[in-house]
Image (tube, rainbow, N blue to C red; front, side, top):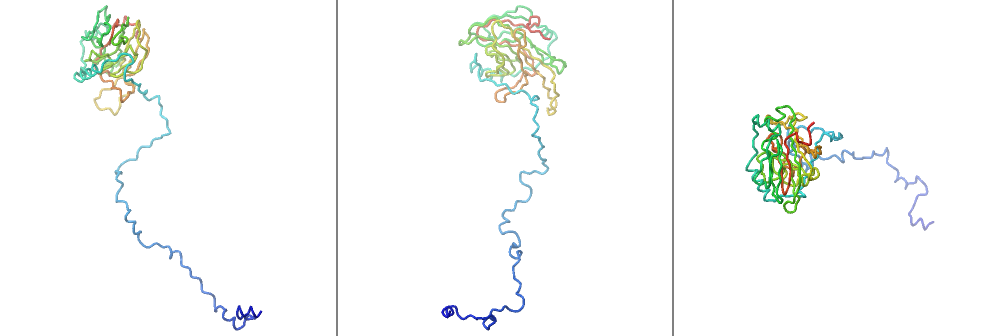
Length: 356
């Protein structure tokens, strides 16, 4: 034991000895512990941070804001519109016809001609002329491009034939079938219908081996008579070679019906009536209200198909309906190319289709 004592030093054998007095705590309670408060430790210095002034927004509203602007109206996107009230989608047009196509030079010449000669203003007809049209007593005007024979066979009845390889030619009625001044439903408050028929007796072989054919249509004057009806402004037609309809359409027309065959009688009518809906309140004062205009096509006395003149149009390809909207006089038109034998009837007594 003496060895261990020498290593560890002297230790008192009993508590309370003189050596143990050095470890006695001082008198009185211990002092309270000092802890700095959280406020003193984390309080930020007074004033904004040094760099905060660099990001202050400029005074006033944002640049895009204008005083007095109302918020956009609320639109309930959960309501599904009734598509039955929407106009039908535009029919797709074609760039060219699968049958006969005229030359580009003829088309360019016609475009220049139409720019030079604007549509004629409508006129008030004499009573004699107005009555003649009502009775179907009209003639066909033969243009210089027409190559063939043409003869009157009765009241309002004509028979003609063109030579094989004949170029495009457009026959026009001598008087308008629709006089815009006295016939408009905006004046008469009645529906106005115009109509005539053409019978194809035979086809020959035309230019370039294409099958000869004809077109039946309507035109406002003046019209370039070396062009088929429907190809230039102020005209519409159904073409017999491809069965397509053309409305101021210098391209390839729109699918409509089947080709017109020899032995068939076809008719084309237009119905002008007061629109079902009132005029648009946004229209400018003095603007003429738009008529409701429907076109119908018959074959062998039966209504086969039709379309609305004011149908939805293709913004890129359609050229509008200028000249056909009831504000200009309209003439019957028969377009021909190649060798065709045909008959034309303006008198209702000889029509296969009879209005109800």
